[in-house]
Length: 419
Ligand code: C5P
Image (cartoon, rainbow, N blue to C red; front, top):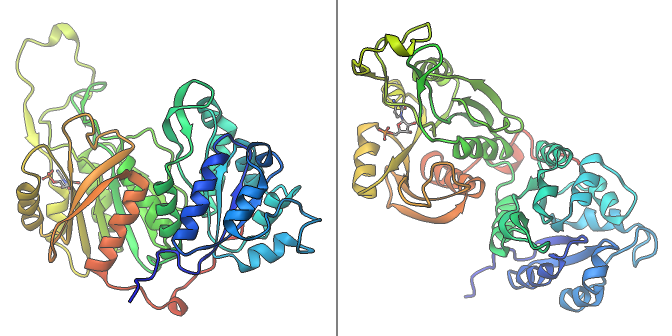
């Protein structure tokens, strides 16, 4: 028997906008069809400057929709969105992101966005400076807050001749996001997830402190993914430079002690604890509340003491909870991971390597091993942290929580309207 393809019979609207990366949408269309999807293509008029509609027409076997008023359907924006399981915009230009965030409906693409009821994935492509433009960053935030999956563009050589962040994400990343969005509508609804993220900061005196290189990106990605999948999420975060993820309650902390208190006070409320934070293991035993003057230091070593092991201490108080830890290891990843999993009485440990150029710390991507308490280790390929977060949530769901309530029991399964 033939196994079912990943996108079998899924009705996808592929919107192509006017970027040089429009040529990559041709290959994307072929792959979507190979995966079993039924694809209708919408092109903006600038997209037709880069690739002829005929190319998409022949490959999709359907007319390409370009105009609001004069195509095959009298009201194409309504017909197309009514039937769609997912809208994929690839490449999405700066103009397209702005238009969709503002809900401007002056062409077919803008209008079908406003009319859409299905999940939406956008894969941006533009020059690096454009991606960094503050107004665009605000539009991306708005779209994400409304439940649209806006992928991060990739770093690399750009059509302008410059190198930077702005390339269309690789095809397999776009496909992964499409599959993920279709599979994981609101499968975490009903869960209350407590996530810790970032480093902690242990004071030496009024201005100096001990910290570590954690950026917080993995924890923020976990919080964002869980919230998008319907969970209620509280994120207790040490100091980071990251904006709070949409629809997540953020609790800022500095020290391990503060993080411990904030997590402990919410532990009974939570159903799942995801301990992504790189909690400092040591702190100065006698921090000074004033700034120690240079000449006052007589050469005595800084006396340190252990901080509380938050995860260990909460795992002793667990009742119904699912506990997930993260371990940063430089050697013997599996053996050290297993030891930690049992020592801290966890359901799942995510082990990542912290040495080498591809270290988990600060990077956009991460390569991990998932160690479930009652299963075999799962080696996950290198992925952007946001996509990895969904994989980790999948594993927690499958191995530690069990299948979600049936769709009709879920409190809210509608996809938010973009307007
Ligand atoms: O023992 P190790 O620090 O490698 O364990 C890592 C896991 O334990 C992480 O999930 C981390 O957030 C958590 N941890 C903690 N309190 C500490 C140190 C680590 O909760 N003081």
